Length: 594
Image (cartoon, rainbow, N blue to C red; front, top):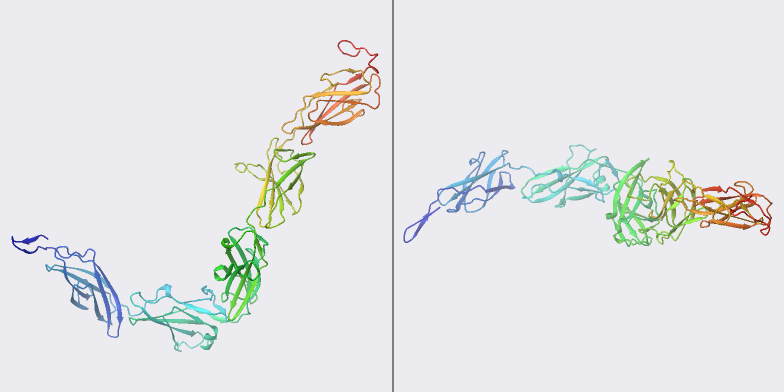
């Protein structure tokens, strides 16, 4: 690689190495197929010589690497391609060798193998098959006589040799196999329509298949065939129904699916041969939202066969991108077969993506109202639940559901099981529910009462209040005879009674009122019946209509009732009437009666 020179001029370079073929590539393409010979186009690249450069290339073909018994080596100069001819009758693997020469006379070569092709290649993906007008591949052996089938195939041959054209022939399987197939040219297209009339014109009375023959510009050809099918007569198609929903028995008036609208149709005698298109409109048969298109048909399946009638379920789907909340839409289906067209439309569905507005709930136990929790209850109380101001302008009247859950804490790891479920009809604004559970609730349990307003789309809004289970009556207090907070054993008046009390308590359910009574024996009410006073009262007195007898003993009883209606009652130890008049009555200093 070094320079050789004198003091006055350059002489040349020293080059001891052959060209570098490490990155050399050789490509061989069969370009023509003639009766006497085949033409192979050879292209190469990647030969390098950094010292003196590539001077020329030579190309030869043989049965082994570096041999040229098929085509002798020929110098092609510094060109990077050439065309070589080989005998047509060769059916062996050949090795094409490209030799590169540098200016120092050194050489290197690269060889590739090639097997001459004598027929056109038909890749598996190019095998012809039948499809319907809707583009679905036909799998059935029998197809309707009203069906317009299309045969589709892929490109035959290699990409380096362009296709010249295709020919198609219909082969009747009930005719003699010796009858030659009659091919008709279809140009360079890769599909053709096969109608019932075209099959009948070929005298086919049973099964048939279609041959597709392709030819390329290299002179090669190949033939492939479809599977066998048979045209049969069917009753004309009929659209039985189309409903707004995911199933034929799910005709919705309102949809809450924010992703879009679904429609389902039942079609008879359509199988795979009909063309089907769905559409959507904001007015009957307007189809102004989604134009009639196969794009909206997401599935069509044969669900069953009744006699000779084929039942097909068609499902349409319209995404929500063009829909408006609160608006009504109508789904449509068009079925086309032959020259006939059927069309049908649903009854319409209103879009409602919003939950009902939250209203107010009130819980009443006996005479007590609760707007906020906790609501104290026993495990068997009757709760009067009422509500107002729940609204839904899109889908109209609401239905309600009352649920009693184990807890209001949705993040709790404990079992949030349903303890009670009560369905309420639309229009009802209150309901009596009985607290009960398959499992007795313990003292202090905190279940949850939820009122859910549900619109026709199935969306719901809930208002919940926490309950507190309290099984305990108020604790027993002390009742004192007399109004002044101390216990008297006698009284001077025979026309009035009085009492005071203390020590009654209730938790967590508060005491809501007291009742006091006076009788001629403990807990009796023959003198004064139970009389209700507020929960803040601690004493009471009353003027009597009838006078008391001299030395008559009176007992006062007090009943404390909590918010659950649970009560406890205590009585005094009695007081004696000792005087009819305060003027002629004297008392010892200790206020005791003697």
